[in-house]
Amino acid sequence: MLRYVLRRLAWAIPTLIFVTFLVYIALRIGTDPVASYKRINPRASKAKIAQYIEVNGLDPNFVRGYFRWLGNFVTLDWPRSIKGSREVWPQLKDALANTIRLGVAASSVGIVIGLGLGVFAALRPGGRRDVAVNTAAFVGISIPPYVSAILFQLLFAVYWSRWFGSTLFPTSGVYPPGQLGFDLGLMLKHMVLPTFVVAIQIIAVYSRYMRSSLLDVLNSEYMRTARSKGISEARVLFRHGLRNALIPVVTIAALDVGAIVGGLIITENVFSYPGMGKYFLSAFGEGDFPLLMPWMVIIVASTLFFNLLADISYAWLDPRIRLA
Amino acid sequence: MAYDRFVSHRAAVVSVFIMATLVIFVALSPFTARYGVNESVQAPPNYFLSPRANAWLGTDDIGRDLYSRLIYGVRVSLIIGIFSGLISVAIGCLIGSVAGFRGGRFDDVVMRVTDLFLAFPFLVTLLVMRNMIGGISWLKPVTGELNSVRFIIVLFAIFGWMGVARIVRGQVLALKEREFIEAARAVGASRWYIVRRHLLPNSIGPIMVALTFSVVSAIISESTLAFFGYGPQAGDGATSLGILVGQAKGAVNTGFWHLALFPCLTLVVIALCINFIGDALRDATDPRLQRDA
Image 1 (cartoon, rainbow over the protein chains, first blue to last red):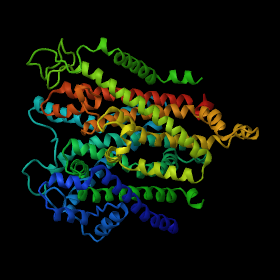
Image 2 (cartoon, each protein chain N blue to C red):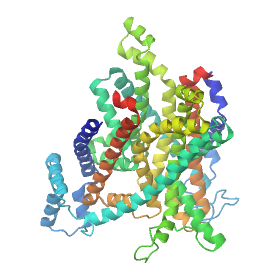
Image 3 (cartoon, rainbow over the protein chains, first blue to last red):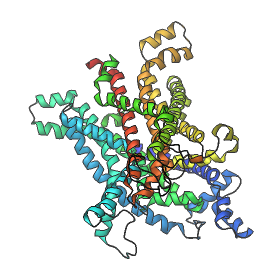
Image 4 (spheres, rainbow over the protein chains, first blue to last red):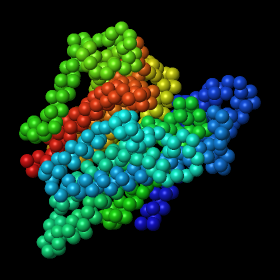
C-alpha cells in the first residue's frame, strides 16, 4: 500500500510540471502577457518592459521561458501584478481562504443532504419517494449555478425586502461595505445563499450516485447471505449495505472536486464573493499573467491531489483493488 | 421493445412534446415571433415594461419584446447545441472506437488527455482554450471570428468529443471480446469493417445518450460563456439564450422579475427536457435492463 502511494506521488510531480507547462503555453498564446502589460501600463519605459519579460519568463522560446518562470516560482520570487504592481501572494491567500470556506460549507451541506436523499430513495426503489428524489435531482442537475443564483437573489433579497421590509440574506461580498474586522455572524449570513447555490448541484449529483450505488449493493449476494444469517435489518443495512455502497461514492467525490470548483467560480462571481473565482475572472479579463500563473498552479495541484486521493481511497477501501 | 420502454418513461414523453413544440416555434419564427429582433414594441417610454397585451413577457432595457427575443435566442442556442453535439459525437465515435479497438499507446495517450481535461474546472479550460484558439492565426479560416457562433461551435466540438470518446471506448472494450466479433475476424473482415458494421451499430444506445448530453452541455456552456461576457456577440442585435440570461443579472437588483425569470426558466426547461430524454434513452437501450424486462 505504502509503495503504491509513493509511486503515485512520484508521478504527480512530473505531471504537475508538464500540465503547468501546457497552461503556460495556453496563457501565453491566449492572453499575450506582454501586450496586456503595455495596454495597462501605456507609459512604461523600455527597461520596465524588459524587466517584466525577464521576471515572468516571457522568453520568445517557450521552453526556456517556462523554466525561467519555474525557477522564479519555486524560489518564491514571484513577480508583481501588472495592474497596480501589487504583490500576488496576499491576494491569492485571501481568495483561497474565502473559497475553501465556501467550498467546505457547500460540500458538507451538499454531501450530507445528497447522501441522505440517496439512501432515502434507494430503500424503496420505484416508490413515490424514489420518483420524487429522482425528479428533484434531475431538476437540480439541469439548473446552472448562475440561474439559481439569480433566482435566489431575486427572491431572498429584492422581493423579500419588498414584501417584508428587509432583506433576508445579503447578496454580495463577505461583509457589508465598510465593515472592518472579524464578525462570524455576518460572515455566515453572507455565505448562506452562495453555499446553497453550490450545494444544489452537489445534492443532485450525490443523491443519484448514492441511490444507484446502494441499489447495486442491496441486490448483491452477500446481502442475502447477511440476512439469512439472521442479523437485524438495521445492522444489515448499516454494516453491510452502506459501508460497501460508500466505496464508489468516495471515489467519485474526490474526482468531482473539479466540478465543484467550477460551480464555485460561477457562484462567487454572481455574488461578488472575493474568492478564487472572482480572482481568476478579473485577472483573466485583464490578461494579468503574474496573477494567473500561481492561480493555475494551485488549481492544477489540487486537481492532481484529489485524483490521487480518489485512487488511494479506492485502493484502501476495496481490498480487491489492492491485491490485484 | 426499446420503444416501449422509452414510452413508459413518462417524463421523457412529456419532454419530447415540449421540445417538439419548442422546435416548431423556433423553426417558424417569422410567424411565431411578434416583433423583429431589434424592434421595439411601442414608442418610448417602452423600457422595462412588465408583461402586458402587446408584450406578453414584458420588454427589456431598450423596449424590445422579450417573448420574440426568446424565440430568436433559443434558435441560436439550439443551433449551437445540435451542431456542436453532432460534431463532438462524430469525432468522439471515431477516436473512442479506434482507441478501444486498437488499445496500446494511442489508447493510453487519448485517455490520459481526456482525464486531464475532464478533471479540470470546465469554465477555466473553456476560457483559456477559447483565447488560445482565438490567438492562433492559421486556425482563423476554420474557426471564424472569436465572437461568432461558428467559433463557439468549433470550441465546443473540440471539448465535447472527449466525454463521447470515453463512453464509446468503454462500449467497444466490452464488445470486442464477444463471439460475433471473433467470428467476423475469423472470416477475414478488416478492422475498419468490424468497427463500422459491428462495433458502432451495437453501441448506438450509449452513443444516442452521449449525443443528448453533449447537446445539453453545449447549450449550458454557451449560456455560461455568454453570462460572463465571452459568448457569441450580439452583433446586429442578434441574441442567444446566454445573452438573455446574462441580461437577467443586471435586472435582479432593480427588481424586473420578468427579465430574470423567463430566460432562466427557458434555459432550465430545455436542459431538463433533454436530460430526461437522455435518461429514457439510456433506460431503453441498456442491455442490462433488457434481461429484467
